[in-house]
Length: 217
Ligand SMILES: [Zn+2]
Image 1 (spheres, rainbow, N blue to C red):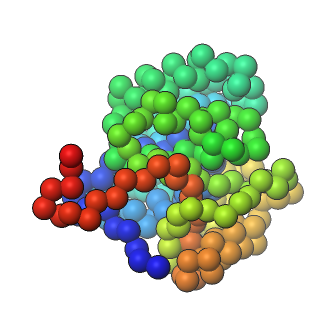
Image 2: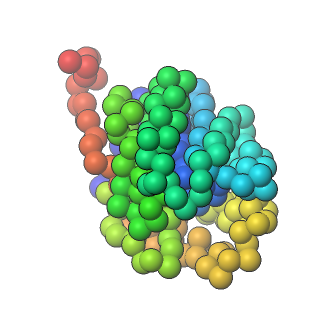
């Protein structure tokens, strides 16, 4: 297995989530890894939130990636497919503001209808970004083997769990929310890619260039 390493140079990252905590659960370890990379910016956009959860989101993401911007919209939680047009427009509007190199979004086949819609719409708006769809463990049991992995150091894996617990107090009472779940999934993805911990992603389309003299058409 070889590692694919993006070019040295500026990397603009956009993270999409349906709800506060989606991004941090799905790719929080990767954000902590990216925080050590030079010339990297991170913006996060969430489509739904209650006032309480909006505050959590606005303070959480910059703790994972210092300087990250957070945009929180107010579409209805749990009902996004009914508001397809508004969700599409919201993403189109974000597309005018953000032209990321790397886009994180929920899986296109996530069992949660809000996640699934955002995941499916992402590639209709952003066609020049590498889109990596993150996974979110849930009661619906929709996990499947990832196509791509990002290794996460043990320090950052444990930091991710600490930050999830301290950043989202409105969610820690949920019966599925605990350290074992978050660390366990990262440990499982780690053994699948020969690292201690990792986060798994799904890519529908990846372009590779092996000609460093001019890979662009
Ligand atoms: Zn969610």
